[in-house]
Image (cartoon, rainbow, N blue to C red; front, side, top):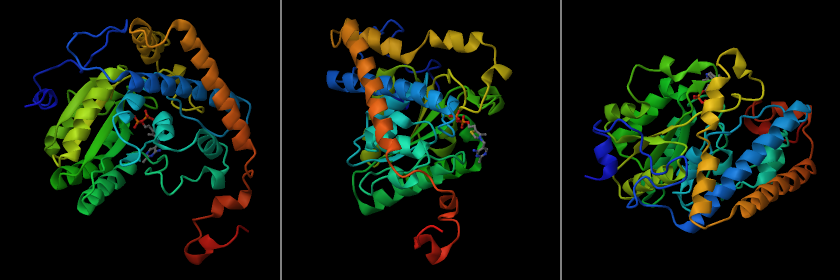
Length: 350
Ligand SMILES: Cc1ncc(C[n+]2csc(CCOP(=O)(O)OP(=O)(O)O)c2C)c(N)n1
């Protein structure tokens, strides 16, 4: 029985955690990702934070419609995605997995184009094995189970990595997808980002279950709860789940315990439903601070190199924004594209 399996029996109450907040391994024998994976992870997390900052400004300037930040959840998203191979595996995001989508092959200018309504430029290239962001909560999950089922019928080695939030676990689509995935033993890794809130609804109002990972037991596959602010734990648990899936042993549910530090999206005001001390405390568990502490301690980067990287990713966002703004601006008639039905969808707008 692997560690992962043992944790599904309910014997261990604590989330899986490898790193202290000071960036030290809790036990020296714990596995750590290869150094290049840590470097890639840190860069993506910094890029994600820079993107959050820029998109919030663009929204406040009235130049961008809506943005859902990743702030606080970066290790959960990046750590899990680092464990799959974008050339082989499928990504099925929810609505705030921007760094995973970038690592999967959607370029930053296309991502920004999507947020700016420049939909032709935003198109996900056919060779990128990824679904678009999903705004209808949990609606992506039956598709994820279906993709995983299809790839297993085709006989390839592909694994599908899907994401949803804690609120999504109360939706019928979540349960239908998990049931199908369990019955058909599909190669699906489902990461539930438990950021404690579904807009204003706290997770305590979603379920009486002890943990969201316990949901998996009812569908006959392993569920494991992980410290979602710990890149190492997220990477290792997802890596084990991916090995299981590739070996034909079926799905795994990973609950990433984290916290949505900012607003739900740019139209939300969280001070209406939570005390400001809550996000302030969560900032003390910041996933980037933790990983930087490890990287400096392990000699992968020094503090000056981290600062240089922060500047680099900001410049990268600015350059991608310039590129995105050079694409065709949205036209009102595009709103009706794809909803008029049949052959008209293939005709020029208007
Ligand atoms: C089917 C559906 N119901 C309701 C909504 C409105 N809505 C948008 S985001 C959200 C909360 C989602 O919470 P969670 O699944 O925890 O993900 P998070 O946004 O926290 O990442 C809700 C209820 C929606 N988009 N789709």
